[in-house]
Image (tube, rainbow, N blue to C red):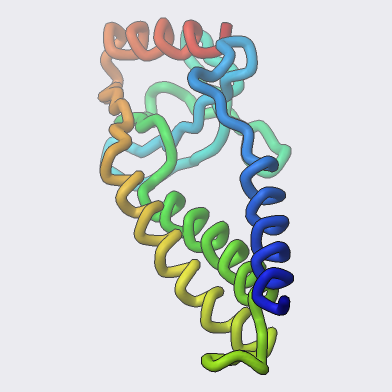
Length: 169
């Protein structure tokens, strides 16, 4: 009877996790907010954040509720999307949270291989974080950010501007 109760707890937890996931095949072009990383001509990162606006001479990026403007003359290149480490951190956090929930939900100290809720949270949390981080790292290898070389070239700036205006529509 206890195993049926534990299986019911596990099924309920998994159903809540799976039902809370929203999947979209394509982002809406009206709600797309492209993430940009802006580098100087020497290769140092100047800024990073959500794309806000672009005009003939300035790029606007929002980070932490503050919009900063970057003059095109100081921009060496711009990369879209986040770095691979971001995927690893997000995957590890999600995997750890799911692991902790499963460890606590399936704890049964009286079974043959029994463990308490704390031990289950620790063990499953670590395994979930490692697995989630690995999946996030693999996802980071698959994504390919676009790189726009600007280096003060007006033609490159216009190409970049046209692409960003398309994203913002």
